[in-house]
Image 1 (cartoon, helix red, strand yellow):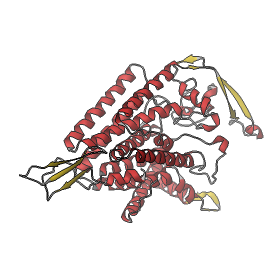
Image 2 (cartoon, rainbow, N blue to C red):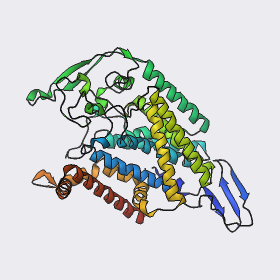
Image 3 (tube, rainbow, N blue to C red):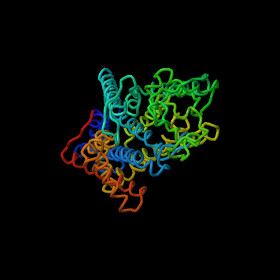
Image 4 (cartoon, rainbow, N blue to C red):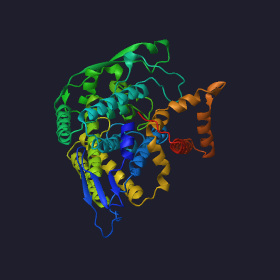
Length: 466
């Protein structure tokens, strides 16, 4: 989503002069091969990607990812089945972050095949990493307090260091052979730590959330008994242990998904009061984008990178679709086999089985979109998603991170609850005679609004990027 990515995707992957019947193929960053086309039909390029044509399917995929972010973040409470899985298993929401990382990898695959200078490539990597990391700190570090809260600011002693954008910003390696070696190394380190590292007993400090008195500001020390290896359960897994050890509890996500498990919520899989016999760890912080999880998240980027390599090296539509399909189904098969062998699907832990399943699903979705949009040229049904994808960063920041709704809510009538955002959602609930379906309708209208807003920016040729 950076300016380098967007600009490179607009450049032709195949330069073709129809008058001279010469096909100019950019094979890699250092060489250009010039191949004569058959003279019998010099303009027959039906099996090749059209020159000077942006891959619209990538924009649609980006737009779909941002739209899903908006959907699951705002509808999750009304439809818990659309919210993130409390711990094990996958839901629609659990595919959103892998989709995002996957398409980042595809885009980087297109960009760095065009970079001839290693110093320039290094500068691009460092610059993009720093920009994404800093933007992630601003958007997800706790400075903006989100929907329904008219405050902002963050205690630097409790800032959240890691998030979606920070993970994406650290997922770039340029050399192809190093990419494979690096990915295999990451998987090996992850599995060795996940199943081999000893997790001792630990304790954490939290506020007495169940009390309504002034003592609610007092802290309680809660002890958690572990002394195990290889546990994947919420209290004693290595992922949380490493984050607590390195990042510190104050810099982790303070409302983890496992607070919606049966052990921690009477309304599971939705949020709810703690059961009478709930374990103490229910209120412990846990970061789904922590250090160890980020290692596997980088693998998702790497998988997308391979799809980008296929775009660069193969110009035939059939070849691309075939290889993408084989690669995607292979990843799905590996993921299911790992699950059968005892490695559960868990977005919070970013298990290898989850990585393979979500990367395979990302590949299949991209393949389907590529076939519909770039091969069959059925673009009208997906034009809103395409517009959102072309300005994915601004839509993500304003909508998915709740900056725009928070600003609108700042203008209210007498009481903060009487604002345009809440009033519009309440109106939808009245029209549909249902809180759940009214909320869903409101979010769909919101997505349509952002699609049209992105279309307006596109018509004005405004593209906001890093």
